[in-house]
Image (cartoon, rainbow, N blue to C red; front, side, top):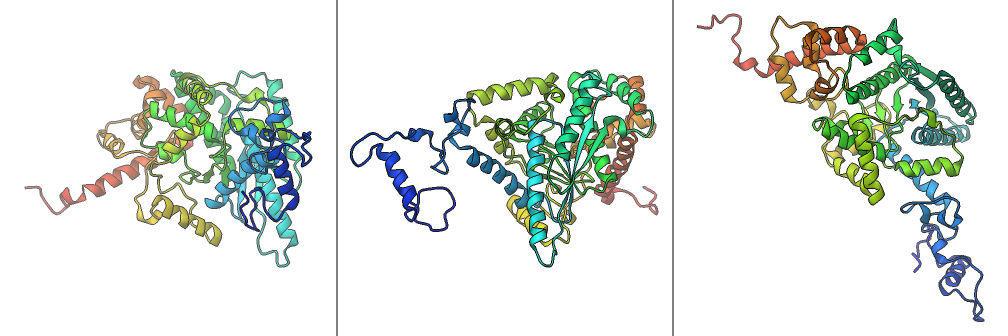
Length: 468
């Protein structure tokens, strides 16, 4: 039956639209008043949302799983963009004064993220041009690709072709113009980067640890590029499917304490806050949108995972095939964990961003930054450390080397999977680390020792007491 609402935009049948009502009756009865059969498509082929256009599944050219095929293309695309925009606006991810760097790998997720950010920027530009006072500026957008040719087995000519295709994709987007950055992953070093990076990865014997270290170096290079080029937000294309895999793999690796930090819409523990606007979108949906919308992707750079990460990816894929809602269920269940205080955009002078931040604090019972003690983080993966990790650091003696202190400041997962076990190998590994890792470890070691001293201050003897 009709909703009866004059302002309804859901696409349902309305009593005030005679043509739609007539069409509805025809589809329901399947016959004309004279009793002759209608030559109309089956009502099962009509879009579930707009009730007018044919579904994607009725085209017969592409197979669809789950509910995707029950919508027409416009409704399917609008639903995906709606989830993206809701995540951006409700979490204050992008403000008019921001300069956003989109991490672009060439895969479907990052391609859709770039397209949707571009469309939001286009609309902001149109509003800016149409306004009289032009009080709200248009946020900037840049695109960054992490060049891993120094450690990849992909032929250099294929890598070069993929980079040229990416440049073409970015340059062909309508104005406003977007800068394209090719970020060599060895740029985390100040000199001899390629050789030192290769030697560092070779020093990690665990397959999963090597893959995780490469991921951490990738984030470090993106952060470095974003900071040097004046970007204020780093936007990743992580979707529900990828986050679901991370939930399982992080649990297996013993990262349960830090897990809530990695799966939120916003992660401001980094110098440049990281945002995940595709958190509620499935990989299958993003892949399908790229195919239907003609968005070019580069599969050559999407190498399969290995070790624990590969096993988990295969496991989650199998679960999703058995039940299309499994990935959403995993992420939704993990989302019930309490976020950290840095899982929100830092307060600014932007009133709209400030309001969204306050709403999110209330929703998740987040404390303002000034009301919580500072976190200590692993110098490799930047995971927040638990109190037990602090205790491990306090047990170090004064004769420990810098490599020993660095290892003690790392989270248990990095200690087990990335750090070498032999002292000599650990010294060599420490000498190969990017300077930022070393500086962070020293700063956090001092910070953790200071926090421990403050906690036991009441039990310490003062300088004037002789201890008798």
